[in-house]
Each structure stands twice: as structure tokens, then as C-alpha cells.
Image 1 (tube, rainbow, N blue to C red):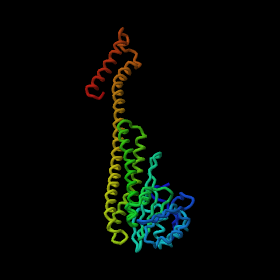
Image 2: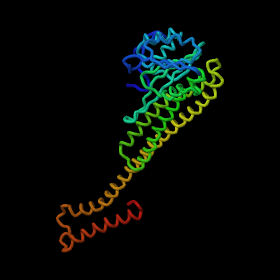
Image 3: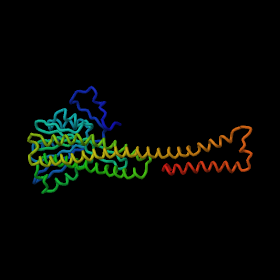
Image 4: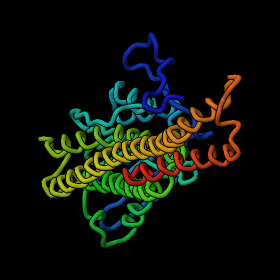
Amino acid sequence: MARFLKKRTKALGQSPGDLIFIGNQKMESVQLRLIDYDTGSLTDQELLDIKDGSHFKETKTVTWININGLHDLDVIKDVGRIFELHPLVLEDILNTGQRPKIEEFDTYLFIALKMIRFDRETETVINEQLGMVLGKNYLLTFQEQRGDVFEPVRKRIKRDKSRLRGSGTDYLAYALIDTVVDNYIYIIELIGERIEDLEETLLVGHDTEVMEKINAFKREINYLRKSIRPAREAILQLSRLDGDLIHENTLPFIKDLQDLMAQATEAIDTYRDLLSDQLNIYNSVMANKMNDIMKVLTIFAAIFIPLTFVAGIYGTNFEYLPELHYKYSYFIFWAIMIIIAGGLILFFKRKRWL
């Protein structure tokens, strides 16, 4: 299956705004969770139907509705109708191959990002589509499956004196994005440790497994880069918005995210260069190893060429060879062979070819 570009076969010939789920179904049924809070109250509950949380849209509290599972089009349509979302936004939410971006509408922002996981067993990067709709008093998050990196944020919300409890939806959106970005850096560090360990292995052994790992990590780094570089652009765009959905008190925190994203992209570029250097080192080592083998074979050939010449002369079928009738000719023959071979070996050693 293509990892860098999701197949859009289902969407061929469809009109813009037609709702089609592009991706793999990862859950049997959609799960809805609502967290509503302010400084003095907190509600945390599962919703059986998105309509059960529709009245929170108009409250002055902060409402966070998380939707796990994107395959149920009826649920997505209900969300779009209740929160008056543009059909193209719903289309982007359902496209799990959507490039990270930010789009500004009259009453809300749409943010598309990638959540990253690292499978330690297969040493591969796995990403998941994350859609966010930021309104004045509500935040909607759309995920492909159960399980995310937001649990620390949920715990902070449950603390009465946390900054989240006294802030608006813009700060909640920042907190979630910050958690996603922190996870980017964590994953990059995990892969970076393996790449650095690979460099040590490269200096010790030179088998084909090392080259396979170098190529595998290059593929994962490029896959990670595909998700993170557009996210950096999106966060930069978020910090420059002029609307009233992002308050001035939250802007410094969002600008801090830019530094983290710059750190993440620079680390990715560094590891890409390191992997390229490792591949060059591997090829150089293998070339030198092959040269050493060829040098040894050439030296052996150079030693045996004169020996073969001498042996060939005395192996001819001439009727009369005077040396053959000499009493000590056999011993003289071996002495000549040893002198020639020994002389060549000494010559090669003086030239430091041996």
C-alpha cells in the first residue's frame, strides 16, 4: 500500500464537497466524548449521538467534542449540520491523506494535522489524520481511531487551578497542538537514537543488513518529514491570523510552537544528511574491502605468473632438455621457484602492498 499518497479511487468523478471516506476503517462504531468546562464546572461524558451535545454550542463554557472514527458518514453529516461546517471542510476531515493545513472561515478555523506513532517492533512510522474545528466556544477534534496523545491535556482540564480551566477554546487548541508537536520531537528522538546506534554498527560490521537498515530509516525519515514540514507552515499561518478566534494571550504560546517545529524540522534534515553520509561510508567501506580482495588476488597472480612460466618450460615436449639429465635438476628447479616467489614477496612488502 502506498504510504506517501492515499488512494483516492473512491473520489474519482465526484463533485467537490461530496462526502466520501478515504482511508481504512479502524473502528466498528464511532465514539463521541464531550468535555465541557469553565473555572467552576466540569462535565466529562460519552455521547451516544452528536445531537445530545448540540446545546453546548451556544453556552459560554469551553466545549470539546472528540470524535473517534471517520467512516460513519451520517455522524459526520450531523456534526456538519449542527456546527454549520462547510462541505469542503467535511470532505477534508474524511480524507485521511489530507496535507496539514489551516483554513479560516467566518466563525471557525479548520486545522488538519498528523498524529505520529512509532512501532518499535517494525521500526516504522505510523501517522493518523487529526482534524480540528475551532469555534468561539467549542472545539471539535476528529480522529481515525481510539487512542491519542491527549491524555495529559485531559488530566490538566480536571485540575481546578490549571491554566486550561481559566482559558478559552483557543488555548485548548494550542494545548492539543503542543502535545502533538511534543510527540513529533519524541518520535524523532527515538528514530535518531537508532540512527546514531546504526553509525556505531557501521564502523564494526559491513554486512548487507546495515545497508537495509540505512535505507529503511531513510524511508521513515522522509515519511516523517512529509507530515511535519507542512505542519510547520500551518502553525506559522496560525500565528499570523488576524481574526478574533485566537486571543492575544494565546499568541505567545503559539509562537513558541514555531520554535519547536523549527527544532523538529532541523532534526529531521540533520538525520537525513546523517543517513546519506552513512550510506556513503558504507559504500566506501565496501569498495575498499573489494579493493583489498582484488589486491590480494592480484599479488597471488603476480607471484604465480613467473612460476607458471618456469614450470611451463620444463613441461614442454622437446626431445632434448639438457637440465633434465642433470643429477640435481629437481632440487635446482625448486630452489629457483622458492627464490622467485620469495623475491616477489619481499618486493611487495617493501612496496607495502602486503
